[in-house]
Image (tube, rainbow, N blue to C red; front, side, top):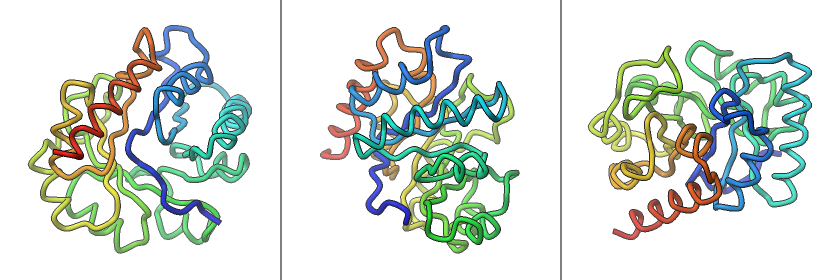
Length: 214
């Protein structure tokens, strides 16, 4: 059964290419110690076997700490390693097909860049939405148009499931995103590229928690 009451407050999205040679597991461990509440493993290079081996190691570390592991794009890998969730883009496996395969075994997140996409995903049974890019981001070159805070606000007014924003979010703008309706933020470079991923995660979490009280 998929986990209940997932805490989407601060999601680390991994990227080996930005880690300055540091192992992904080391980045994940530091980020978790700093307060990250979920981890999305995104692996664009290497073989499927390498992806699985890495996912298993990270899964074991996270499971001991009750932190969910989300696999990006690859439903086959998510099922193989017993991940808690899978995150699918608009060009990945259709939501209905993915749900028919996993049933209630894991939660499913869907990337959205418009209100129309968000409405379709919510009606289709998505557990949460990855909304963005909110700001310009250097970590992906094939992103959809910038959504911005106004776009986020429009989606928030019409969608009830959790919204996790992504795209250029860092310590300087995280509070704005939360105040405009995000339930949480997903970050890549702000943690993965940081000299001290643990402190970077702690600073982001403090910013988010403060914004939620204002």
